Image (cartoon, rainbow, N blue to C red; front, side):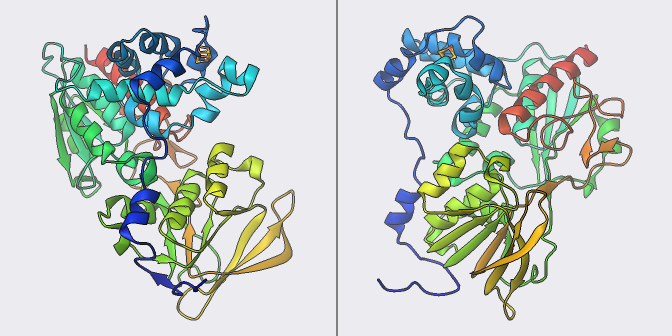
Length: 438
Ligand code: SF4
């Protein structure tokens, strides 16, 4: 077999192969498949799946509604708790949430496919011309929501529904946050993040202001002065840097930036990728970067993680997904140095022991490109907010240390950094803001 072009190059695969590689990870269920899958549910009393869902969706109820041929009612059951139920059906790690505890998983090793059923129901309702929710009578109150990612969108929708007027700010030129810029393409095909955003805004009463960044012309003081309440959902805009020699060589790139660029690239054959790629990290971002590097046509992709497989932030399902795409998974491998003259040529990985100490047993991998996915940090948090472990401190209602300011999503302390958790926090903070403003 001919060797691929060395270095970092665009067009490793043709348009047809790329289109196939980046198609839907799980093709949608049709009505018959959904009924059959729904019929496997025992409609448990005290359903463990519902307890495991961070947004507490009444799962047995919506599955029963699908089973009885009323998917639109099922979607309402879902959206009442989680207005981003369409995206969560695509990106939720259901294998470690609702499906992991499903009694059919526990008894037979085969759960009810809750995520796919949720997608089926939400797709049916979202295809309708009208938005399923209407606004309460106008309250005359105004709320600034800063950050149009999952937490911000959930908060904005709930506040608009209660009759408040919402100004939705985001630093980028379009909304969606991580749904638009931060997850693998094959989990959100056909521009679903923007379609969902457009659908959500149909509630009315939400005015987007894109290209407005907190700290760059937009201050918390001015928002507090202008609006009755402020909800901060600014995510984690900073990335942790790799502190090893060679981290600044050409070809070393942040995985978050790679994924964001990929998501915004219309013609993937123009996106350069290395022949030999190494991804550093153990979370979802690392997996998404590694799998997509492979799908773009990289020949060798290795994911190196300094801890054990069990310690990985990415679930076993995601690890297996990466392996099934041909990604090599290396555990207890910490980067020691990236080498090359001007550009990346190799990476040295030091084996770690049980205490994560380097043992001096070094493996050198040839590499053209290294993606760093070693965590993100809070950037641009306004002064005066209590910060702990580099996140905004809130109480269980989402209230921060500043009166009239709430926070939720990845920027706030507590809860896992998952889309579904962010949605729950945005929704719950909106309810508390509503109580405070009433
Ligand atoms: Fe249905 Fe499984 Fe939930 Fe029971 S645990 S209600 S079987 S989805």
